[in-house]
Length: 261
Image 1 (spheres, rainbow, N blue to C red):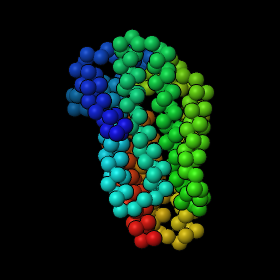
Image 2 (cartoon, rainbow, N blue to C red; image 1 turned 45 degrees about the vertical axis):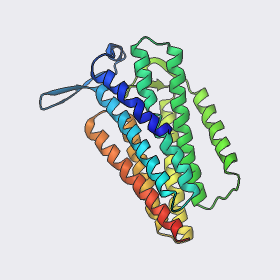
Image 3 (spheres, rainbow, N blue to C red; image 1 turned 90 degrees about the vertical axis):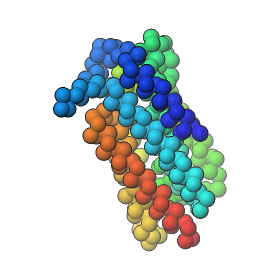
C-alpha cells in the first residue's frame, strides 16, 4: 500500500511543479537549477528530476505488485527482504515533498526531518538487501523479526546521526546530507557484498539460478544509483531499464529456484 501511495501522491505533486505553480527560484540560489536542451527544447532540471522520482514510485508499485502475485507460487526469505528494498525506493517521493515544502516556505526543520526519513528508508533498504544476500549464502535464523529490528535500529541510528545541509539542495531536489562520500561508500559496499553473497551461494550450492540472481541484483542496484542521482533523461531512462530488468531477473530466478526445492 505504501508503494502505491507514493505513486498516487506523485501525480498532484508533479502537476503542481510542471504547471509552474510551485516556485523554483530557490534552487537557482542554491546552484541546483539548470536546463536540458535538445532540438530547441529547454526543460528545467527540476522537472526532469521530479520525473525520475516518478519512475522510482512507478518501479516500487509495479515490483511490489509482481512480488505479491509471485508469492502465490513460492515464498523465500530473500524475496521478502528484497521487498523491503523495493518499498524503500518508493520513499524517494520524499524528495519531491521536501522540494514542495521549501518552495512554499516551509520550516527547514521539517525539511531536515523528511530528509532523515528518506535516509532511514535508503539505509534500511540496503541493509535488507545485505541480509537477503546473507540468507542466500547460508545464514539461517528462525527469528526474522529480530533481524528486522536490528536493521531498523541501525538505519534509525545512521539517519539520526547524519548531518543535513539545510538550504543546500541538489539538482535531484533533495537536501544534501553531510559526509556525502561516506553515504556513497555505504551504498557501494552494501551493494558489492550483496552481489558477492549471491555469487557465493551459486558456488556453494552449485545452483546456477543464484548466479542469475546476482546479475539481477547488480543490474537493479546500478539502475537505482543512476535514477536517484541523475536528472538527464537519457540517464533516467537507462537507470529505469536496469531497475526493471534487474528486478525481473532477481524475482523470476529466485522463484524458479524455490519452486523446484
